[in-house]
Length: 186
Image 1 (spheres, rainbow, N blue to C red):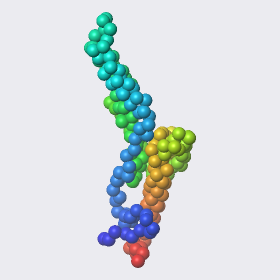
Image 2 (image 1 turned 60 degrees about the vertical axis):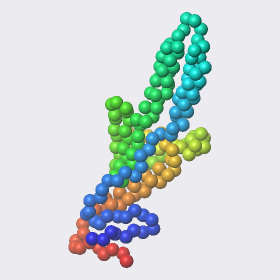
Image 3 (image 1 turned 45 degrees about the vertical axis):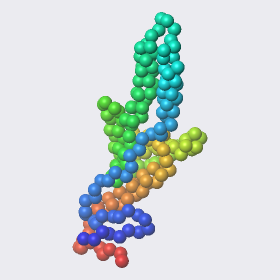
């Protein structure tokens, strides 16, 4: 069987009744601008440790400085980074998956076939950085909120295309073909 043709830049459609593989379209984390303050704290702690190491007054020792610096870096740099790193949105050809958590993960899915509304919200600072918030609501479950997404307009277009293609495929596969499949366009 040959690959069906497509019209004007649309993705290739599988033959009617053929299984469609689930492919990853994008994996997205929230905008890294949220780690700005953590980066400033890390730079400040490194500078302070470099300056005060060996220059502390008598009752203090260098190990106290290093312990305090380690605690500050752990609380204000490492933990926020792990929280940011552990929250991922994955867009596939069949669904949107939200996974969050480092040690105990939470997972949420929203399928494209069911269809959903997409709302884009952008503040002034988000517009300047190209980020935004997408809210995906299917009317049944709680809305899936994708906050501080970089390149939000591109992600919005990808989601609209995936919903459209999945609904076309679901409608086409639901049709009963009385005989052989229709001929492909030339």
